[in-house]
Image (cartoon, rainbow, N blue to C red; front, side, top):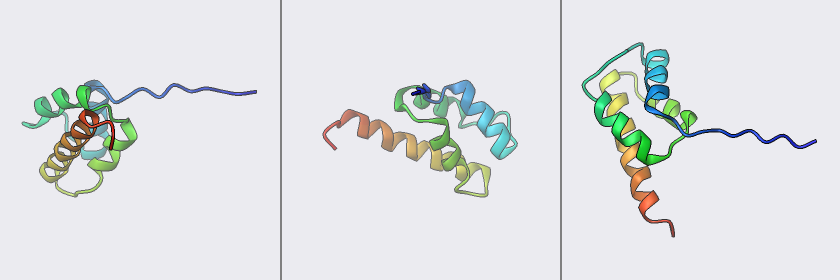
Length: 81
């Protein structure tokens, strides 16, 4: 028997849940920017969680996620890469 599981991309709501669980925060000045990019970048919740865990400081962690989202959006525009 084959089982197919659809794993959706991360949503702004999913990002907020991950930020609360991994960083212990419910809001930050970078949230609006991240929420805008997260819909465009097509990243999985696992990719977001991985980025959030890379830094110990909240601000650095969120900046790292923003940089990651920018990179993913650039890759999306260049499908040949």
